[in-house]
Amino acid sequence: MFPMFQELAPHDPHNKCGHHYAICVDLKNQRFEVLDSMRSAADADLTTHAEFFINNLKETWNRHYENSKVQIRHFPIEYMATTKQGNMMDCGFHTLEYLAKWEGRLVPVITAATVVELREIFHME
Image (tube, rainbow, N blue to C red):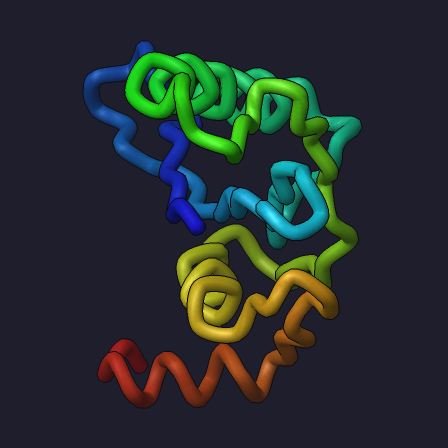
């Protein structure tokens, strides 16, 4: 699993706001899974960013593991249905939960209480 960060205004040197999401390589189901708490496959910014990373990962895998029994160049991308965050600032907490709990079957349910708990752990309130 790869934690991702995408600048939301990459051409503005004063705005360093961004968005966190995760990409998983699911070897068992032979696919890439994108978990995003704010966007879906209908969002061109997400798909462009995720596909750029995934294509580079496929190329790197092919270069370094060309003789491996496992090849990933044919893996499709699936944008997983996730619980959407209720604001513009909790994406990092959702991504932490994906990294901690993703098992490749059920997307972790992240509630407002989960975010409050994480805020307390990280002393952010």
